[in-house]
Length: 156
Image (cartoon, rainbow, N blue to C red; front, side, top):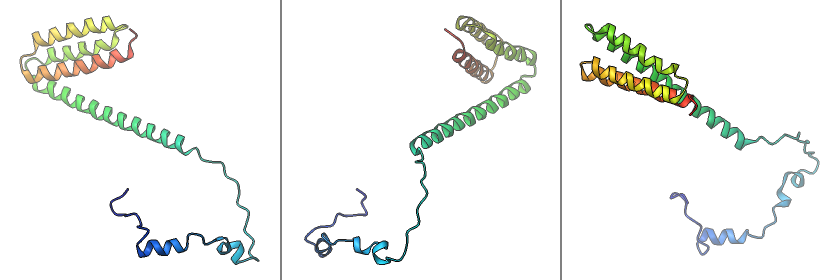
């Protein structure tokens, strides 16, 4: 029960007043009885709206939209990270581009074992090639995201 509302105590003045109206018949006070010459128009029949189904579909749609927006946000963040990584690694730019290209080859895998093999090879190359911790973290995170995404699309 809401804290703002209190139950009516029967021995209070309001409770006693309400008790007096307990057996009052309200039918004489309805529109047809108050205005006998007034004809109530026929209301058209409406199909019941499957409200629960509509609410469920709306919530699913909103959840899918939210997931898609999060995915778009994550993807654009990844693009910024990659562009930043390429532009800041002046002396090893070609090697970083090669690593990015190799990370994308994970998506070509036809089965999970192949994806895992490519992923391990890419991780080894990242560790052997990249010199700064920041660049290593960015590439490893991006490769892991690609790998996890590919795993969800591949058969066992």
